[in-house]
Structure formats: structure tokens, C-alpha cells
Image (tube, rainbow, N blue to C red; front, top):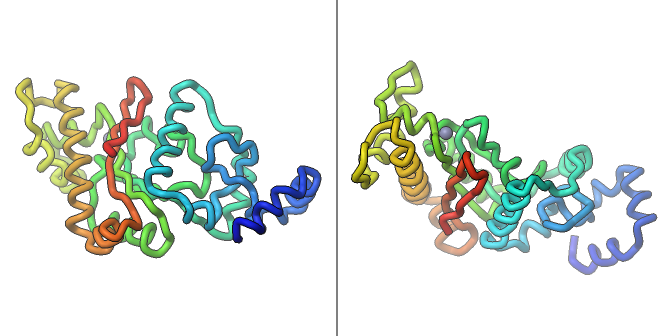
Length: 248
Ligand SMILES: [Zn+2]
């Protein structure tokens, strides 16, 4: 939908909007302001045109503001049912995240995002492999996402396991993907899983190395970044403060 058309739709007043919404037509027209945008009281799904107009930096800013609301105990006035209906016929997510399975770090909640806003790959320790990269390539190259964000977090159990050389079934192989970050972390204090400061330093290094690994192991994503179509970066979520710190 072009901008002019959208402006005309918006100008037609609340009664028409209410009617369209009541009849379910609003969702198919996808003319609502979009749940991704701060300040919109009409929280439906992100449209194709809205997503395509956004830069990676603007998407990060939306996430930053969403996290600020989360930290204040506030939430955007969203309606999940409307978001579900508005996104059912198609999705235009702005970003693809790679985050940990940790139950305390749900990306959509801690950055106040809605249905259809982001793709989210979750695996313990937010490490990449061919399946994760394939998912990201789909998200960016085929579905148009503009941002690849690796989201690590403090007090990560997977990172602790890698530091402790924990072994258990398939977990052993997963932790092996984190161990290079343990080795690569410069730290002068106690290098143990009991030292939270060291654990968090390793988690940060793991995010940095995963970002670098994505560029190295996915020529598809590296090319998209090189031509300015996407941005690949990392962030750390602090379980204690609720703050997401973006690397860039
Ligand atoms: Zn974790």
C-alpha cells in the first residue's frame, strides 16, 4: 500500500476505522498504524511498507524504547487478538533475533514487541550453527528483515556450563560452541562459573564471537550487510536490571 493511500485511509475517521475493524476488513487492508511503532494506540501488525521504510538503526531504537517501557513497568497499549488477526495473512518482521532459551529473557516481552514484529531463534547460549544461519537467511533474504540481533544475557546457565566443562548427552556438543568464548575472554580475576563477573564477560564475548561467526559462516548475510540492506549486531540483557544494552 502506498503512502498516499494510507494517508487517505487514516483520514477517513474513527467511525470508518471502527466499522472496518468490526467487519474484519481492517486486518486485510493492513492500514493500521502498526504495533511496532511507539505511541500507536491501534496496535495491529507491522505492514510491508512500514517495515521496508525502517532502517536498522530505527528498528534498534524501537527496541530500545520498548525496553525502556518494560523497565518502567509500562507496556504499549496492544491487543494481541488484533495483532494475530492483522498478521495472519502475512508477516513482515523487522528483525531476526538469536537469543537464549532462558525463561527470564523472552525478547518480545523485555522489549515490548508484538506478534509479527520479529523472528526469534532461541537456543541455549545463543550460538549459531547451519540451521540458525539458514533461519536467518530466510528471515533477511526472503522475508525482508533488516536487523540480525544476537541477544545474550547475564548469569547464563549455558555459559556457566561451558566454563565448568559440563557434559550431558547432546548438551556437550552445544556447550562446545561456547567454549571458544571462554578461552577468548581476557579476565584477570577468578575464571570460574561461580564468579558472575567472569560469567558475564564470557557471555558478552560469546555474543561478539557469534556476531563475527554469522558474518564468516553466512556469505548471504555478509553480502546483505555489505550492501547496506541489513545490520548484524549484538546486545546483552541484564537479568538484574532488566536493561538491554545494544552493542551498536
Ligand atoms: Zn542463557
